[in-house]
Each structure stands twice: as structure tokens, then as C-alpha cells.
Image (cartoon, rainbow over all chains, first blue to last red; front, side):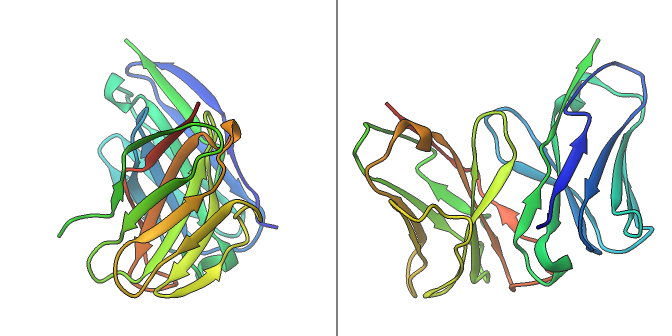
Length: 113
Length: 114
């Protein structure tokens, strides 16, 4: 059974600081998604990581994927208040041969001024 | 090109009533997925449908829940005789193919059972 775990579950950080959110998954997959969710809203797609070693950056966020370690990271650089949200990683079941996603538990990020 | 459309956005039902949630996929998408998000939790897969077929319903409760995606019209998630524990956000996603393509999410329907 595919399990996806994120840590930390809650992250309070000051503006201007850097931090990393980790996403571990239990079975083989060469594809991983990161989403952002604001309270009461839907999921906004942030990154689609399609292969081992993939690295993508958008603004202050950078995501990477290590399929051998079954680990993805979401790195936040010089956080700003607007980044406050819940971040989810998701892995397709059967390693990408399906679009059925297993989601991590989420990381609630609170950026304090 | 409109995104995935869900309605209603908010739905309040009394215990024992039926809830019907609708999802119109993106244009050109024939694969639909329903997920449920309980408060303070991540999304959990419920069911995957293609036009007129249920492909995978392994995440859907065996009783009171059903889903369809007819040839014409939106996909419907139906919950009969709702209970308080059904209160959640229900998200629909659609994709162009059944594998290796990104699925896009709708705004969700927030069901409250009173």
C-alpha cells in the first residue's frame, strides 16, 4: 500500500528565513506533484516532477525529486507572508501509470512578520 | 477554456437527506476523479470514472455513496441518508487521459450535515 508522509505537519517561520518541507513515499514512483491550498479553497498546482533528479523553481519555492530515496523536498527561500498556506505532495498510484493520487498529510505553513 | 466546474460550492443537508454533487470536467477531459477532504486532513481518493464507466471505486464507502459519469452531462457523486461524518470538502479532478497526464482540480463542494 502506497503511503505518503510529509514533515513537518506544521511550520511556523519568520519572514526572510529559509526552510524545507519533506515528502517521503513508500513505493516506486517517478512522478510527484506539489500543491498549495489556501483555507477554504481548492488545490493550486505548484510543481509536477517527472523524473529522478528533477528540480523546478518558481519564485521563492523550489522542488526536487529523488526517486531512489523516494523523497521530494519543497524548499522555501526568504519566506514572505503570502506563502502562508497548506502544502501537499501527492504521488500517483502504480508509479505514474494512473492519475489516481495518494496525498501526503499536508504541511501547514505560517509565515510570521 | 473553463476549468473543472463543481456545483454547488456549498451544500447544507439535514441528517438523512440526500446530497448530490456535480462535476463538469475540463473540455476534452474524459477522466474524472473524486476526492474527499475531512477537516484538517489531506485529500483521500474515492472513485475514478471514465465516461459511462466506473474504473476504480476502491476509496468509496460501500454504503450510501455512489458515483456516475453519464455519456452526456456532469459526473455526479451521490450520498444518500447523510450523516454528520459526511461533512467534508469534496473535490473533483479531471484529466485528458487515464495515466501520465496531470489532473486538474475543481473548487470543491463543501458539504455540511446538520
